[in-house]
Image (cartoon, rainbow, N blue to C red; front, side):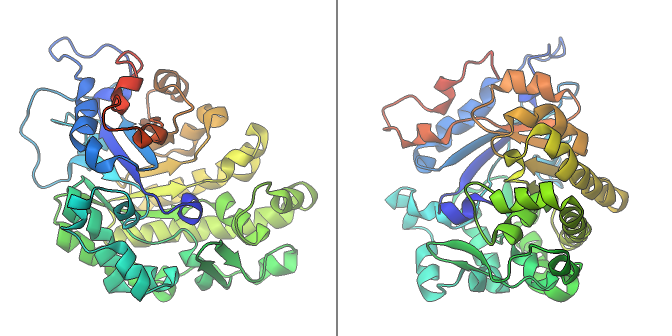
Length: 393
C-alpha cells in the first residue's frame, strides 16, 4: 500500500459487471451503465474529499447489471460481481487503510463513529495499531459500520511480513517506512528468511477470522499483500523513494542478487495469500505500487514472472479466490498485466476506461479510473460521473 505512507486518505471502490466493456449486451437485457454512477450520487456528499475513487468493471462476456434480481444472500455481492454474474447494483468498498477516511467525512458521520484519530492518540505507533488483533478488527470495521460498503479490507500494511523475514523495519509518523538495514548485497539477501505467517503474524489470521464472523457475508472480507518488486524496492532503497536509483542499480549491475530477493518475496507472498484465505479473506489484492517505475521490458523481467508465479501458486490451492492487482500509473503496462493471471486489474484516472478495456482484453475484470481530485470540488459542482461520458464506461 504505497499511499499509506504519503497520505492519510483512503480510497473508494465500486464493482460493476455491467461496466466491463462497451460490447453489446444480450438482447434481452439493457446495459445499466448508469447504475454505478447512481451509487456515486448517493454516497458523494459523505465521501467528498476521499483521495482515490475507483470503479470495478468485469468481463464483457459475462453478465450485466440487470433489472432487480434475487441475489444469493449467502455470498457477498462483491464476489458475485467479480465472477461476472448478474448483480442488481455495483458493489462498493473502501480500498485504502480503514480509519483514515474519518478525517474528511462530514461532521454528522463523525458523531456516529469512534474517531480513528482518537485511537492514533492512544496508540501512536502504526505498527502497534496494525499488529494488535482488537485494534485491527476495530479499525477495519469502522468504515463498514458507518457506510455499509460491500467490502471490508484488513487494516494492515504491505510491510507487515518483513519482521518475520529477518528484515527489521518501522513505520514512522511523518516519514513513512524505514528499513534499518537496507539489503544491497548477496550476503544481505542470504539472511532473508522465507515468511511463515502462522509463526510471524498470527494476529492477521485471528483478525480475519473475527472479521468474517462480524461481517457474516453482508460484505466480502479482503486481505492484501505487497508484490515482490514493490517490497524489494522498499528494502533495497531503505524506505520510500523518488528515483529508485538503488534498486535500479542493483537490477542492472547485480541482477542475480535482485532475482534471489524477488524469489524469496514471491514464495513468501504466495504463502501469505494462502494464509489469509485460510483464515477468512474472501479476496486478496496485490499491491505492486512501484512496478510502474520499470520500463515495459524491465517489468517483464523483474515483476511479471514473479506476479504470475504467485497467482499460479495460489490458484493451485485456492482456485476460486479472487486476486486483484493494483499498480498505479500502469498505462504503459496494460497489455502485460492480464498475463499475471489475476482476476481483476486496477486502472487509474490517466487511462480511458474504454481504451483500457480494449487493451486488457475480455478475460479480466477492470477496476478504477475516476480522478479522486473531483471530490475536492464544491457540493454544487458536478459529481464524478458527470466527468465521464456514458459511452466511455
